[in-house]
Image (cartoon, rainbow, N blue to C red; front, side, top):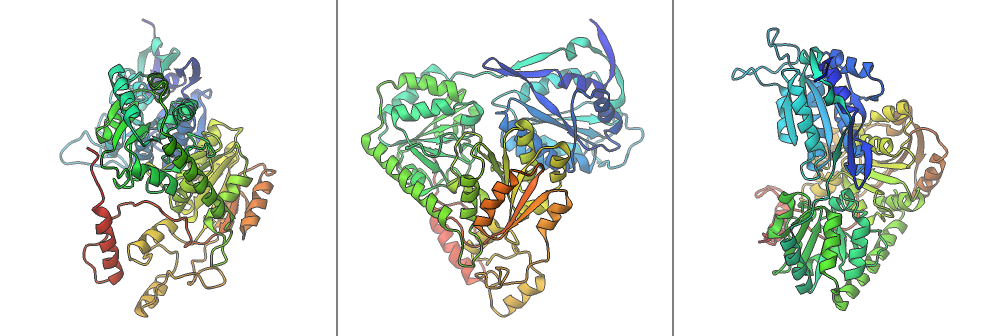
Length: 637
């Protein structure tokens, strides 16, 4: 066996740059490069290795959490067939990545994290940034990653790397088990040399399989579909990851079964397909809600049935409802006592179609779905055409419509948290499978700009529209600089409503008057409450608010980071700004102040418990309403 003497960090880089994924005969390099911020815990190890091997691209970034979001969005846009690596020093640099790791794992997205770690040889302990424990010397802050990683390891000897890297790749390329993979690399061991077998660095192709469902389960599922009177499909992210959109379209057209889409699954069908009911669940449309309530069979494809999808277990009201679940993960396929079809979405739909030959949903159910589709499409247009709220400020629904109708139809739109995802889940008209990119498994504020960068890196020729509210923007905006540095132009639509709009609305719905959700001075809150006044009433002053908001100029902030900025005051201004932005050669931020009160109506429920006892009458009233809805929650058994 031939060997090559390398430091552990050098061996990592040599290994990573020769890993490939393959599905359906399409082979591609699995890692698109490495993001990193260097500190004492990785500068002499991973930093030196990345410098020595420039053919494995290093990307500078500004925030450790953000770079993991970038990697996750990159992986999502590549249907999990590619990803990026993220390296940090031990300490706060490492723990900053924990939120990003949780976001990736919850959304089943592969990212490889290489945090530095404390000295393996221990003699100099406690070192800078070391967490000490009186119970064990084998613990560091990196143990935080155990709960949010699908695979976790700490490499205390250089030779341990050989088996660890292969296990890491197994998990990263698994359609069922993928998520964040964390390999902790102590800062001393990174720099130690070892005679590694040269075979470790040869090109290695990881085939991503299209697993088939059990034939008996397929027969059982086909029988259940044939027996159903009102079936419906819930299309989740697995439809997109398995590239099953064409198979789903053919299945729907052939058998006449209507479709609702989850956040991750939106774009599984074009919005104008006649049996497309739009968003489903807590942020769903009235079309999807009505069909879901009456459905006696639900065919879940690539969904994990979050509380938003099931409206906190108040959707699917039919007492006899049954489930057929198509999912690569056995864990998700068995949910709700379903007939589990554990397999790839595309091939499972194809094989199920063969067993359903000659079947067609009832004319009554098809006609109902088509009518509801048309009614909802008209409601979307009404929202698009409602340019202003009572305040005179632009209405968020119309701003969404402007981007959807006036933006590049081949573009990708990305969002993650706040009130925008709920409104866009209902209103966005997806014209292709990649147009709607939402991170809503973790709903992580700050994902938007970093994620937009990841999409642009994955497919530079596509226009990327980042839709972000002021709350998320203030949490994490510095990778606007990275986009400019690397030449990846983003078009950022920044909607400013001087506070946390989504939680403000939720707080008012809970009888709590939007407490703590406005960007205002504390004395204004105290004075209004002393006088028995609400500080969250309808806007009245010239700036569109009934209080003096904090003197924060987000547009100027974006300019200070190097962005081209366009300031808007109306929906028509935004339309013009979208056109003007096309001629700008760097990241452009389109800033608009919008109304924080008027929103798209909700048609389903979401369980947010209300205080059981309170001195506030509004809270007590909200509790009564909550108890009525809580009583409607059920087990699907």
